Image 1 (cartoon, rainbow, N blue to C red):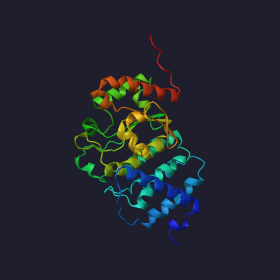
Image 2 (image 1 turned 30 degrees about the vertical axis):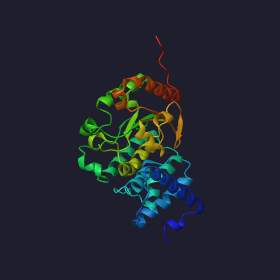
Image 3 (image 1 turned 180 degrees about the vertical axis):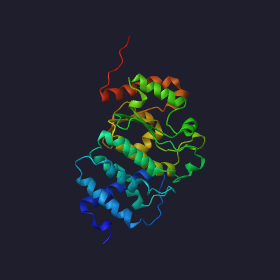
Image 4 (image 1 turned 90 degrees about the vertical axis):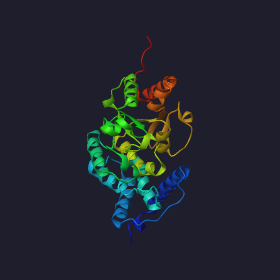
Length: 296
């Protein structure tokens, strides 16, 4: 009897729901064809055990458990962008795991380091071909607030740190206006390698890389996630809606509060939108209980 047949019916239902959610997401993004690829029994065993453990979990897992889950989920995402049904389960298990209690803050830095090691010198999609440095993430591993952008630009690709160019300077100013420092928040992107010419990540690239982002969110366990721009909110939620349809409201995303605003690069092109972005940031501040600045 294989590992999949040993999963109890309730776990199988959760598994099926995860697959269906991922398939709907892929269909919205234009992925409609799937190709069967065998998954090693060791992966099936680990995944079956993982799902069962998730349902039973009511206490925080230690960093070794997080590391094991990372290797099971992330390393099996294919580079072709064609996600077979079994692999779709693996890619979406990060969503299921958000129901588990978060890691203790002291263990989160180590868990992020383990995830970074798991990514390694990534060649899972074609973006690695023009990469200088992989851009993983930056900031406080136990931050209450996390910013998610689209992907690295030229400056980020050169330094290996997200948001360090002109857009990064503006983001730093935005964080400062909230009464915070950059080292008090966590910053990551949907994709970890720079798309050529700073283009929008393609479907297969986002499909390959976004599970890493979901793992980062799970490990950091922020109270509020701020999606910077259309690409970020699409990959975080699996829903394609106009950006302004998201703004001005606190949304729920995998147990976190999600707030959507403009990407700093867009604000550099259209500074008139900065006042609206500031309204979004004040919404995040209220959710975090941060004191709003007093007008002089």
